[in-house]
Length: 290
Length: 231
Image (cartoon, rainbow over all chains, first blue to last red; front, side, top):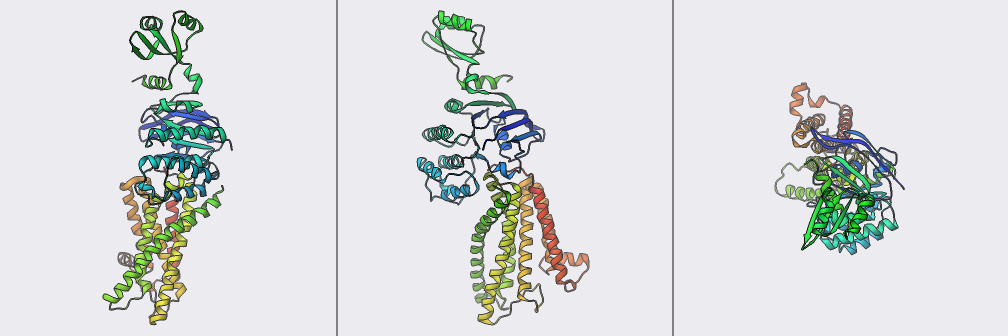
């Protein structure tokens, strides 16, 4: 089932604190979204609204044209995966997988078992006795195997070590190819996950900063590399995001699209133009106004 | 997946999980009862009234725990608050019924083996077994509902406002006890200036049913739009 997400002027206040303010965003189904923002930017609030964990203070949310809050048909199609506190959880891994199988309409048990094997998850161990990395792997296993048309991973991979995260990223790519659905990944580990995103949503201080296709977003900046003096001369009137120097060679990340004339000029000066990283753009875009 | 299917699945699952706890609980009560009868008791109290008070407390605790343990868990499975409510209520009704039937069966065996009378101090001696069972069922269910109210209040508003719900729950269980001559009825009897013996059983049933409906309705109001805790 294809379910587009539409949020219109959505706000969420806790007393006087504005966790989310005036967010309007359209998420087409079947794509992978990277929701990025600094700690406390409002990522989790945004995602828990989509998962109907709470109601917005104002504005409207529609999933597949319907209001998702308390809508049994929609809520069963949205999976929200986050770091759960399992300190008291006596149930075994197996029971967790069985519960998800019982309530998730598209759950694929064989796939869950394959994933559990890949993550080395012990089936008969109580969940509270798993390491935090293994608990994350369990959450992610259930999230992926649920094959929910909207699957949200809210920093669900923080407890995992790098090789396990890598397995998760591979699975996201393979799943998106074989069973396309809307996958929303929130993170501040931008540099290692950016290749997964079709679309990027950046939020900062509860507001939507931008929502753009990943490749278009990267055109908003460039990395200029070459002899230090030449690079400095070339970028002197541009907005610099980051610079690195090694001996006489310098690389400067700039913000703003390069005109054709500028590109020509760079080539003539022997400068290399490379893509800017999402990480640098993210840092730049969420630093403004500080 | 429609909401009717969800409710029945959830009520079955909750009944099985809580039933497992109830089996442990009843086994423990049985052991304590046997020890109690052998060592302490001179009055030869039968099992049914002996199990009555602990069963009420057991159901009260189940009710208090329910939102914190099951609401987040099931919403995370994509279940609505509404289905959680109806599923939990059905499971609690089934569990209360199961407890009263099992307690009656154990007492029945005891009656056959020892010839002792099944009496419940809240009803008169001539009360029939179905009537005794039904009063057990209603009473433990009231305690579940009161606990659920407290649990929902704390889940929704935290401990401070949750304390207000504890007061309300105490009023509910003591009102229910009033009509069944329970332990907490004294203040009410004095307040209403009535004699417990004057209250008819039919009236007690009706009032208890109203109390139950009211409490369940309050729990539904508290959980209908509640923010689900991420934990």
